[in-house]
Length: 287
View (tube, helix red, strand yellow):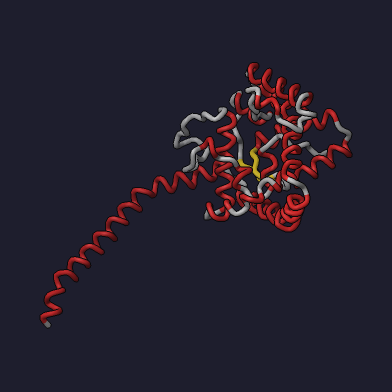
């Protein structure tokens, strides 16, 4: 009995602390209700076709796991790294023509001249782009496409869309893809058969660049679909503003990730080239 009397005050204190914690959690939940409601409203605005998009996401990921990833792994084992690096440089060099065109459309003439200079130097001194000589001269690689050009002139994203085989996109970028295809160097220089072969090869090549990062998405995200969607919007915003996006207001539809925007790259976090290939305009386009 003395033992019980000695601990009774402690027991009462623990009960009071528990009651206070429950009450505090209730208050916190009430305070967070408007924020949770706003988040749900924002999701409906940017992704009104979520149910359909999730099915396409699953379809693309299934194809990647069944075919593209195994082929990419075999490609890495068979082809030495210096050769793969040369392939990347060639594709990037071809992309500089489209980048220059979009810089002109955005009025960034200095960047456009830099892009054309890169293409000239790398095509000649760099042996058709195998070696990135231009970067050593101070001509850095730019990243522009027609979707960014439309965004630069104030055209909004539109609803989020997951395209079969191409992955994360939005209404604006889905439409602008047609322009990117028509103005790509491979479309202007190659015959359809050769263009399609190069496109297929590039899928495997770009997937091979993501093999070391294949597990990042599953580790970093509770919901992989939501993580990829939010990263895509954040990345596109970052690209449109050349790495210096404005602060996002609470009532705007773009979702801000708790990650530094300049470091977000959907290509690096998503474990499928089929779903991320649209995030880089370096690849040749199919017919």
